[in-house]
Amino acid sequence: MFDILMYLFENYIHSEADIFVEQNELTDELVGAGFNQDEIYKALDWLEQLADLQQSDEIPYLNARPDSAIRIYTEQECAMLDIECRGFLMFVEQIGVIDCTTREMVIDRLCALDKPAICLDDLKWVILMVLFNVPGKEHAYAQMEDLIFEEPTGPLH
View 1 (cartoon, rainbow, N blue to C red):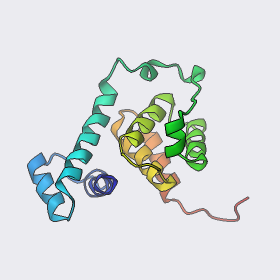
View 2: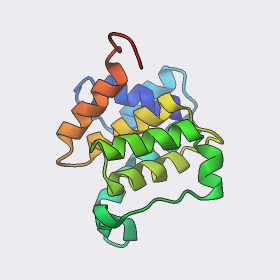
View 3: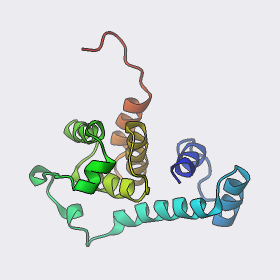
View 4: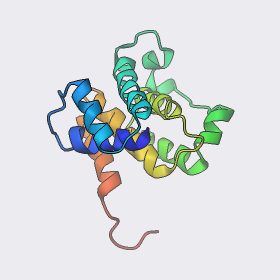
């Protein structure tokens, strides 16, 4: 499913292509690209649920105050997100790329991937997908793009 999400993101969203493609046409294209139809439906549902997260008033973390939020990961989340991933989430929150709301949206979408473990690269792409879909996060999206695509220069300390 993650490969389909990456394909859609790179070919439609990130490339600023026409994203108003009918679902049947999109499904046919994805099947033609070699993706399994069940996985295609899961990926499209994943994107729909991401859009629904923005409009939900009933999820407590969406109303949390950023300065009072402390994140304690569940045992299942720790199994899925290793220390490097959890550290990266803390890092991007501390530098202002994400806030507690977008962090929780990212964790929600990671859990929905049905992967037993998430690597750091996959985490970065999910953060980028979430930021792209949240209105008013254009600057944060650009910062996240820089974190993904910029090659470090000079010595790393």
